[in-house]
Amino acid sequence: MVKRTSFEGDACPIARSLEEIGDWWSLLIIREALFGVRRFGEFQNKLGMAKNILSARLRALVDHGILATAPASDGSVYQEYVLTPKGHGTFPILVALRQWSEEFDDHPEEIATILVDRAKGRPVKKLEMRAEDGRLLAPADTMLKPRPAPRRRSA
Amino acid sequence: MVKRTSFEGDACPIARSLEEIGDWWSLLIIREALFGVRRFGEFQNKLGMAKNILSARLRALVDHGILATAPASDGSVYQEYVLTPKGHGTFPILVALRQWSEEFDDHPEEIATILVDRAKGRPVKKLEMRAEDGRLLAPADTMLKPRPAPRRRSA
DNA sequence: CTTGTGTGGTTGCATCATAAAACCAAATGG
DNA sequence: CCATTTGGTTTTATGATGCAACCACACAAG
Image (tube, rainbow over all chains, first blue to last red; front, side):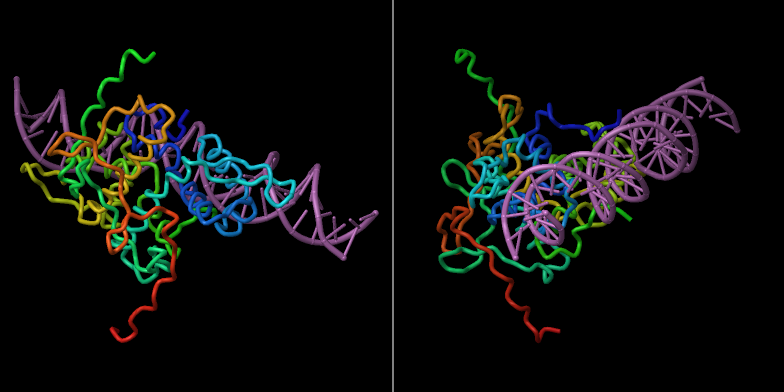
């Protein structure tokens, strides 16, 4: 077997995330879903991807609890794909990817859209990482610690 | 040709990011690099990946300006791979992935490490998105706008 | 100088995933 | 009831991935 090495049992949360949404299409599907896209054909049109792959990805995203199938919405017999809370939780990831591209892309003039504050129409600030007490943190201000041992007595 | 559909000309900044770091290994390589890993063999040991793929990925990351090759550091003849500013700029993406996993993973007890504030040793808060005036923004408080037309006269 | 060993890769297959297109079945639509 | 749309599955070809073997170079020992 060669297989595309699964990160499933990995202890690193980044690897675990990539296991679920680290492929070429999942995040783009989620992006469309955040825009309100729900139907198979709509995903296919917007993303221009092969239908078999879309089918496989949607199934995987449903399996991972990122999308859920809704029986209908306009009375049609066909089902729809809607984001679960876990799916909506990917929003910061998409924002981080977007901002990275905006800041470092070699051809930023090709980027068509900007994310703005709905109330003011002004661009949002870069994502901020803060300490519990509200201090703004730079990467160097952070470190990794082993996870504290789980509470033993709750079983 | 079938090819793995490139997003290179895509106007979506998310697709553009995925084009550069959206494969299975790049973000993990960057993660290791952020920890200070620099040498080929060190990447290979920590990640347990095939050497040919590591070689290809490192080359691609260098081509994209995310890593740079440094001629030496300990006097050895071999070269090292160090993050560029663009590479360091991926930090929020990794944090977002980490936090998503921490919040929504089905088996969070398997996650080995937590990201903490170095000064206090306490977990960092979730990434915050704010408006220019400092208001905290939820996803629904944002929208996409077409990028303003580029300044015509700077050519 | 010859042999051995470690580092840093490249090359050769075998297998997997992806892509395009053809096909198919159930639901509309006229 | 016939044609078209929707929502897929199947087929087939090719690119990507993974493992193992191989290679080049540096360095060290004998």
